[in-house]
Length: 308
Image (cartoon, rainbow, N blue to C red):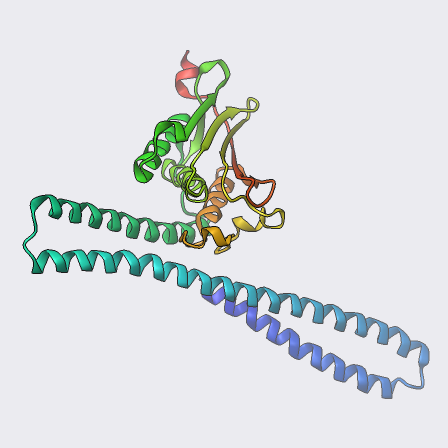
C-alpha cells in the first residue's frame, strides 16, 4: 500500500514537471500570439509566471524530501542489517563451538545464556520494525481496555533494570496521583508497554557510563496523565528536538557512535501516544545536558474508583 502510494506521488510530480514545461512553451507561444495586446499579455504573463515559479518551488521541495527520505531509508537498512546480522553471527559461533568441542557444564550454560540474549535482541529488532509498520496503520491497535498505567510503568522499569543489570537507585520512580487512587488510562496495554519501554531503553542507552534516570508519573489535572523520563546523558541539540520523533531519524554524537538502533523507537512512541489521544515530546538544554521525554495521555477513572 505504501509503495503504491509513493509511486503515485512520484508520478504526480513527474506529470507536474511535464505540465510546467508545457506551460513555459505555452507562455512563449502566447507571448508571440498576444503581442498586439500588451494589457492581456501582461496579465496572463504574470499569472503564468507565478504558477510556474510556485510549481518549481513545490517540485524542488518534493525532490529534497525524497533525497532525505532515501538517505534515512539507507541508514535504516544499514542499522537493521547490523542489528540482525550481529546476533545471528554470535549465535552461530556459539553453536559451532558447542558442536565441535567438549565444554564444561558451566561454560555451556554461559553459552546458552548468551544465545538467549542474542535471541531477545533479534526479537526486539523484529518487533520494532513490525511496530513501526503498525504505527502507520490507523486500523491497528483499536482494542482498548482500562490500564493501570502506574503498574505498567513499574513493570517496564523492572524489565529495563534486569535487561541492563541496573541497581534500583539508578532508575528511580516517583508517582504523584490525586487522592492516591492510582493512574489509569484506556488503550492497548501492549502498545503502551512498547512506548514506555522504548523511552526507558533510550534513556539508559544514551546516558553513557553513568546511568541516572528519573521516572515521574503524575496527573496534571483531572484529564491528563503525564509520564516524564529524565536522563543526564548526551542530550539533544535544540534543532533536533522535533526531528527525533521522525521515522529513521537518529541523533548520533561521536561519543555514542557505538550505540546501535533502528531510528524507530521515538517514532513509535509518538505514534502510539497519538493513537491514544495524547502526545509525546522531548526537552533538552542541548548536547551534554541530558534529555527528558514526556508522554501525555488522557486520564480515566478506574472502575474500582467508580465503585468506591
